Structures are given as C-alpha cells and as structure tokens.
Length: 83
Image 1 (cartoon, rainbow, N blue to C red):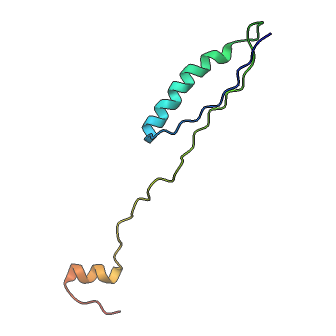
Image 2 (image 1 turned 180 degrees about the horizontal axis):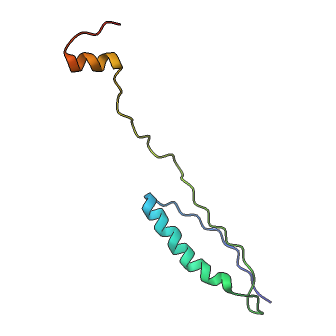
Image 3 (image 1 turned 135 degrees about the vertical axis):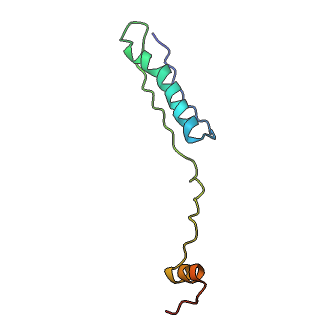
C-alpha cells in the first residue's frame, strides 16, 4: 500500500512582473511533462494547485498635474485670463 504524502507550502516572494512570468514558465516546464504520466501500480494521483496573487497592492502611479485651460493660456500668452 502507498503511503500518500499530503503537503502544503507557502512562500512569500518579491517579484517583478517579468520575474513572475519567468517563475510561471519554470513551474510549467516542471509540471507539464508529468501530466502525461498515466496510472500505474506505483503511482497515486495528486492534485497540484499552484496559486499566486499579490499580497499588497502596488504603489499608485501619480498622474502629472493638469492645468485648467485658462491657466495654460495665461502662461502661454503672458496675459491674465478672465473667466
């Protein structure tokens, strides 16, 4: 009889979007070939569920300050704009 191993692992990683893409590719390279394995007396079927999600929201990107049309014209012409 098989002695089934159940495991749960959790690791916090700091990754850029490119590094996350690379990690996903590496995991796929390790997992996909094993998906072709069929049942046999020495194999038990396991469910592998990799999950990745951001732990915190990325810092917001600040948009440049927008000038009102009146302010922009006054700055461009050197004249005061009257509303």
